[in-house]
Amino acid sequence: TMKDRKATLADGTIAGSATCLFDCMKCVISMGVSERDAILAATANPARSIGIYDEVGSLTLGKRADIVLTDEELNIVKVL
Image (cartoon, rainbow, N blue to C red; front, side, top):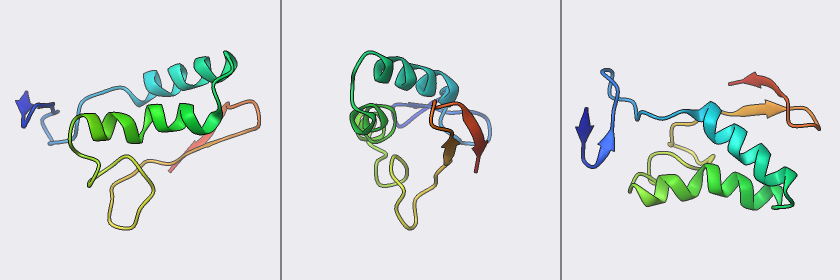
């Protein structure tokens, strides 16, 4: 459903694929984009663009977050 210009799932979470964002992030890093810029493009920038940066998009006290731990080759080791 749509609520406040956001696609949401039945439980109220924002719809979207973190896996797709992560794969896109890895792809642009392999093309020479800095890790910092690629991470921002997959986290903070989308959150700002839909007006929810105060809730998600960075590791900040009080925000909801999933943390992806990777090895040096950017293979997912664990999601917290």
